[in-house]
Image (cartoon, rainbow, N blue to C red):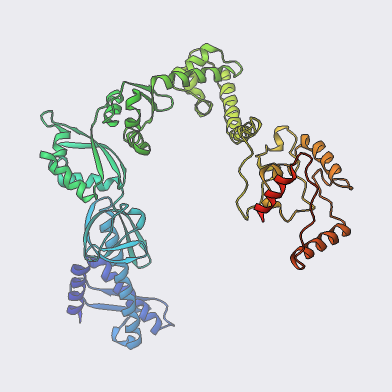
Length: 531
């Protein structure tokens, strides 16, 4: 039995990569637990196993005990404890192994799909490739071999959860190391990398050997090396940038293929203002700002693309805005702008010590007052943005451009005739809501634009509507709108009699009074043609 125990421990050690000492300690603990259940009245029970021979010795309250006395139930309990210990040890071994490989490139086989996630078999265990870590537009099939980097390793119960990623920048880095031997042996180094998975990546490289062209080595003969990487990434575009310690050189390299005229560095804000010609502006920004966004990530600075005319306009507005702050004259405003501070927001986030040390003629007290005032003005500007929009709408209506479009069918009409109203906290009086209709004409939806416009509650329309209503009705107008009086009963009876005579009896309709200037013969001919 003792020899078999040593052989089993050694087999588990080789198969599961679990330390022998951990296994022996787990067996000792299991046997001690089983003995305590068999002898509940015992005070102290100790079990030891010889590591070489496998001999088991047990003592109960200092007296020697035969392990065979534990019985079948105790042996079953010991078996369960041993299995649990082995599983825990196996989990810890897997965790330690894959934790050391975090960020490394792994190759696995697609097993199955769980929702949007892909289960990938890595050999010893399965890993998860979540939907958010998959390259957009890619599809996977069972038994397909894929590559990914290990993003995270976690212990979940008795298992180890391994998270893979194909969108992380390290995935591109490991592919470069795999395909380009100069990077693998560190002759060429990747100094920076920025990526938007599935669309575009920028990689900045440099060589420690002056005889080796870093960019040419990465591209390969006729682009063979970079083509393998692009194919693995599903056609993702890769820009290889030549690294330089000087930002004046690195930023133009990062913005290629656009041609850059000048780079101005604002060290206080970590901002670089790049001047380009008008015909290079869209190329420098890129589609949806992708080129400048990736360049900014690559160099670690906030990169802004401008033309010379735009920069002059921004500087002029910034100097005028800073001059409005109490204690800031034009010269001080110009010195602030020279450091790349171009708005109240930029000024509000500045450190007082940096301003005092950099800006000439600015002491600590004035700097604190200027920054505090800039914060207030920045908040006021952000609060005024929606009100400016409302003001533009009101100005458009005042210019005669017409009322806003009517609401769609089933939507409630906006208050105040559809115009946006300002908040009452700005000191202005709140707009009064429109008066509700107390009578609705059944044919209201069919009236023309002129009649519909007469239903508005504009103050200058009320006198005309009241006068018109009094002229056309014997009762006063309600709510300033035109009201049509109901015909009398006698008029209705006369109209009904005339219609009955024409339709039922076939009599000719009575002739109406002719117009004073109408010829009777012409009128008769026209009536015959109409009949």
